[in-house]
Structure formats: C-alpha cells, structure tokens
Image 1: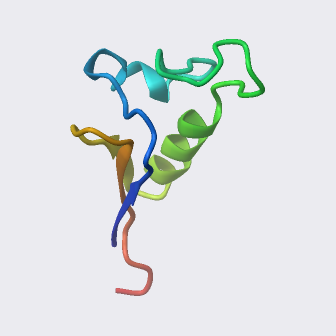
Image 2 (image 1 turned 60 degrees about the vertical axis):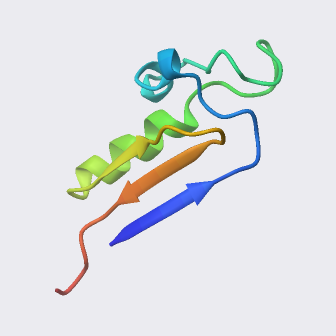
Length: 75
C-alpha cells in the first residue's frame, strides 16, 4: 500500500532529507528551533514502517511531501 502525505508548510530543504529521520533531529525549516518538538516523530514512524517491511521517504518539491509504503496485509 502506498500513501502520499503532504502539508502546506515550507517543505524540507534538500540538505535535510536524510537527517530528519534521525532521532532528535529537527529540520532547519522547523518553526522554532527550540520549540515543543523533540525530533522523534519521523524517526519513530520510519522505524515502525521498516519493521513492517515498508519505508517512509521525503519527496522533492515545494511542500512537505512524504511517501509511506507499507506491505498489504493478507495479500
């Protein structure tokens, strides 16, 4: 199964596309560098997707666009 998730934010700079999936890392475009976020959401989401045999990637473009691939259950 394939899911595309987009938002209308500033997007993910090309230099951040690998690092934002590391625990504790927030992208350089984060609203507030020391805000409420801990930089764990994408790291946990990718770890869970990979544990299930899928993955999460960030796509190029002007908005935050993520592609989530998960195996079909019962297929």
